[in-house]
Image 1 (cartoon, rainbow, N blue to C red):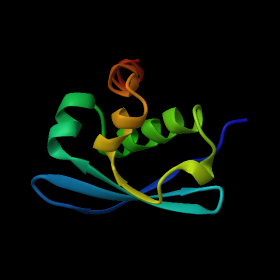
Image 2 (tube, one colour; image 1 turned 30 degrees about the horizontal axis):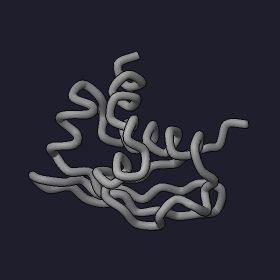
Image 3 (cartoon, helix red, strand yellow; image 1 turned 45 degrees about the horizontal axis):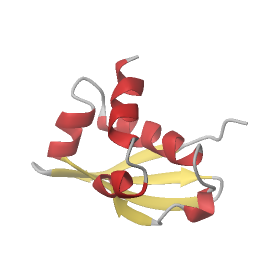
Image 4 (cartoon, helix red, strand yellow; image 1 turned 90 degrees about the vertical axis):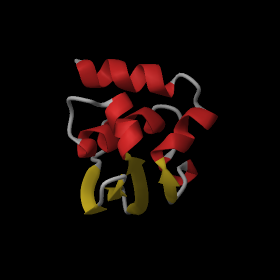
Length: 92
């Protein structure tokens, strides 16, 4: 079953963007550095990177196991294949 992932941008500056993600009644706050955006999703919107990152996480863990507040750069610490997979997904 596909879960609806709603992504809302909270703020942005030169070196990072911050998002709120709503998923099945859970709320998360995610920060994306400009460096991660350039490396992982150079041609995509940052919100798409966040949404696809949550889809990636949900394939591997339940919503309650996802940290309520995190920087996107922590995902590879838990899932080493994240960077390659997210680049592949966003190129499609």
